[in-house]
Length: 368
Picture 1 (tube, helix red, strand yellow):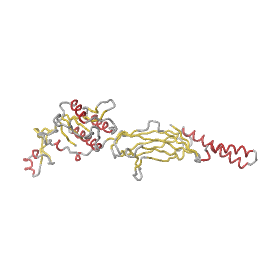
Picture 2: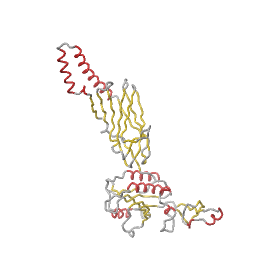
Picture 3: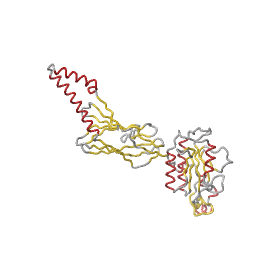
Picture 4: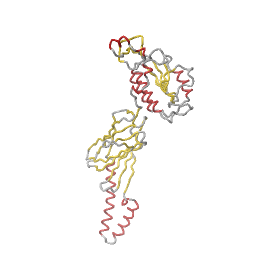
């Protein structure tokens, strides 16, 4: 914690020195009124300093949040607990919090819904009391964001001076904002769910095992159950047994056609990747993720197979922390390394810029 002192004109050092000189001068002239006035000013200055030094040691704060991460444009709530350990009350304690960038994360006003990168609140703390302040936040962009400033403004009762208790150098709270998860209708996965146009089978369903019928949902004509359709007098489709244990390697390439030019739709591709992985896992498939991004260990960012819950969590958290200022490989290097390292039994699903030559690898381009 750093203490910054903000004083009124009367308590400026030069003014106080002048008052002391005048007090000494008027004490020999017998002007009791001026002597009393200058003595009063000096006494108030001393009492103000003693008051603030005492209370700045009696104020503590604690931060609590109950959600580890939130999504873009999703509100989350955190709490700040202010405590007064003194036997005297504290009035007009001002709380100031700030985010560095409005486009990363903002505070949401609970009264009118306005959003701002700064949060200010004035509170009174009775003697030996604790007050919990509820703060609403909203993420504007994915990433690991933190408060850039946090301070408490403590003033004496006469507002002669103020102590700004600055906690910016301490470890301030961080807020993880993960990419949006698109709704299933927004995904262009029907070609995969029903069988890709260039394949004779579905990637998710065993078309040799029919377990019933369901309402027709724009599937291929070969999926229509004509006998059931004639009986029920409405279009019905065949319901297939789901295939479990299929393995897919999702390749996310954020580099454009140039060697190191990032695509402008980077955020859309990241959100799409999260949604594809989520839906693949829901379909009972195993997923591994390869991203054209170099990690701190100077290796390609990849997430191998794991349990459903932990796998999805790793994917979302890893994609949330991708930095546009990070290290990216040329597309040719990315696919050469990734395709060689991926599971041999997996089918590669490419999102973003595809490999230059379609003959080198076996893959499906599911989003350009």
